Length: 70
Image (cartoon, rainbow, N blue to C red; front, side):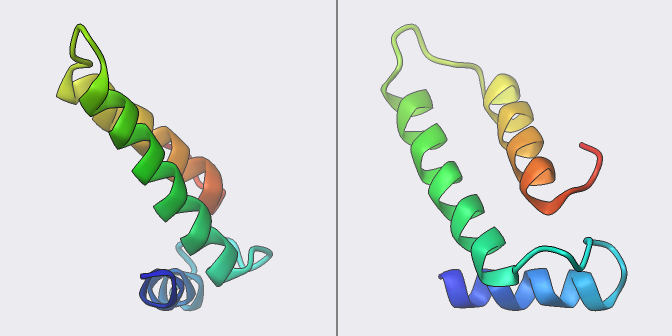
Protein backbone atom coordinates (compact mmCIF):
# COMPACT_ATOMS: atom_id res chain seq x y z
CA UNK A 1 0.00 0.00 0.00
CA UNK A 2 2.80 2.41 0.83
CA UNK A 3 4.47 1.74 -2.51
CA UNK A 4 1.25 2.49 -4.39
CA UNK A 5 0.67 5.64 -2.32
CA UNK A 6 4.26 6.72 -3.03
CA UNK A 7 3.64 6.29 -6.75
CA UNK A 8 0.58 8.54 -6.53
CA UNK A 9 2.49 11.13 -4.46
CA UNK A 10 5.35 11.14 -6.97
CA UNK A 11 2.86 11.64 -9.82
CA UNK A 12 1.40 14.63 -7.97
CA UNK A 13 4.91 16.01 -7.55
CA UNK A 14 5.69 15.61 -11.27
CA UNK A 15 2.45 17.44 -12.09
CA UNK A 16 3.36 20.27 -9.73
CA UNK A 17 0.40 19.56 -7.43
CA UNK A 18 2.50 18.50 -4.41
CA UNK A 19 5.74 20.15 -3.24
CA UNK A 20 8.84 18.24 -4.29
CA UNK A 21 10.66 18.77 -0.99
CA UNK A 22 8.84 15.77 0.55
CA UNK A 23 9.68 12.10 0.20
CA UNK A 24 6.83 10.27 -1.60
CA UNK A 25 7.22 7.06 0.45
CA UNK A 26 7.24 9.00 3.71
CA UNK A 27 4.10 10.91 2.67
CA UNK A 28 2.40 7.65 1.69
CA UNK A 29 3.28 6.00 5.00
CA UNK A 30 2.12 9.00 7.02
CA UNK A 31 -1.19 9.23 5.17
CA UNK A 32 -1.96 5.51 5.39
CA UNK A 33 -0.97 5.31 9.06
CA UNK A 34 -2.89 8.45 9.96
CA UNK A 35 -6.00 7.31 8.12
CA UNK A 36 -5.96 3.90 9.81
CA UNK A 37 -5.75 5.41 13.27
CA UNK A 38 -8.29 8.16 12.68
CA UNK A 39 -10.81 5.72 11.24
CA UNK A 40 -10.26 3.26 14.10
CA UNK A 41 -10.98 5.98 16.65
CA UNK A 42 -13.97 7.33 14.71
CA UNK A 43 -15.55 3.88 14.32
CA UNK A 44 -14.99 2.93 17.97
CA UNK A 45 -16.22 6.23 19.45
CA UNK A 46 -19.36 6.51 21.52
CA UNK A 47 -21.16 8.63 20.61
CA UNK A 48 -20.20 8.16 16.97
CA UNK A 49 -18.11 10.81 15.29
CA UNK A 50 -19.99 12.18 12.28
CA UNK A 51 -18.85 11.24 8.81
CA UNK A 52 -18.52 14.93 7.95
CA UNK A 53 -16.21 15.60 10.92
CA UNK A 54 -14.16 12.48 10.19
CA UNK A 55 -13.84 13.40 6.51
CA UNK A 56 -12.80 16.96 7.30
CA UNK A 57 -10.24 15.77 9.84
CA UNK A 58 -8.76 13.30 7.37
CA UNK A 59 -8.56 15.94 4.64
CA UNK A 60 -6.74 18.37 6.96
CA UNK A 61 -4.31 15.56 7.91
CA UNK A 62 -3.65 14.58 4.30
CA UNK A 63 -3.24 18.17 3.11
CA UNK A 64 -0.80 18.84 5.95
CA UNK A 65 1.29 15.78 5.05
CA UNK A 66 1.38 16.82 1.38
CA UNK A 67 2.08 20.48 2.15
CA UNK A 68 -0.98 21.86 0.39
CA UNK A 69 -3.93 24.00 1.53
CA UNK A 70 -6.84 21.88 2.82
